[in-house]
Length: 330
Image 1 (tube, rainbow, N blue to C red):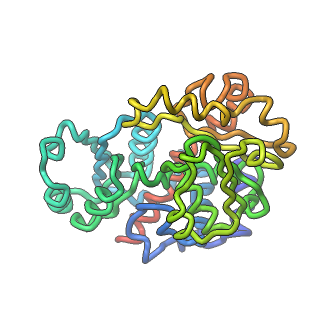
Image 2: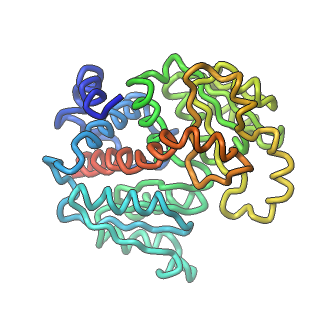
C-alpha cells in the first residue's frame, strides 16, 4: 500500500488526525504504551501516515524555536538518528547528551538534572535502563518527555511496528489479526506488545522458555484474555500474520549469553517454523538482528523490505509523537 493510498484511507477512518485537530490535551508525555488509550494509539498512527506522506513539504513546524535534549545511557543507531532527523524536520534543534558527558554520569540525582534542564530546553527524549528514571525526569522537569527505550517498555518501537503493519495490511487491519512474539518475551518489547494488545484488542501469542514468559502478576495486571502464553513456538506461530522477534541478549545481559542462547534456540524464527504461519505472513524485527540466533539469515533477507521499512517508520511514528506533544503542551 502506497503512502498516498494510506493517506486517503486515514482521511476516511481518522479525519481529525489528518487535519489540524490532532491535539491531545491530556497527552503530556509518552512514557509507555500502558498509559495510552486505544484512541490515542490510533490517532498517533494516522498522524504518522500523514507526516510520512508529507515528508519534505510539511506545512507546519510545531517545534520551531525549540531545543529537545536526547539523553542516552544506552548506545543506539536507529533511535538517535530517527529522533535527530525528526526533531529537525519539525523545525526543532536536537541536542544529544550522553550520560557519560553530563553530571548524571557522575552521580547527580535525576531530579536535579531534570529541574535544571526544565528551565532551558523544551522537551526530552530519554533512552536508559530504569523506567523509574524516565518517570522521575518527567515529573521534576515538567517537560514533554518521551521514553525512547527502557528495560520496562519500548513504546516508540511498537508505534513504528503498528504503522508498518498498517502500511502492509491496511489501516486497522490488526483488529482481526493474530500477532506473535517469540524469544525473550518478558522484555520491553514483549511488555509493550502486551499493552498494545490490551488497548487495541488483537490476539497476541507469546512464546519462549518458561522462565522468559510474562510473570503471573504482569498478566494479572493486564487482565487481557486475548494474550496467549506458551512454551510451544509452533503453537504461537500457527495461523499468525505478523511474527515478531528480537535479540535474546539485551544490553546489560551480556553475562547471560551462553545460558540464554541454549534455552532460546527452539524459538528461532526460521523457514521450518514459518510453514505453519498464515498465508501472506510477515516477519518483523526491531533490529539489530543477530543472524543465526533469533532469526536465520534466509528469513531476514526474505523479509528485509518490511524489516527495514519498520526501521524507517521509527522516524515517522516518533514525528507523530513529537508533533502531538508539541501541540498538546503549547
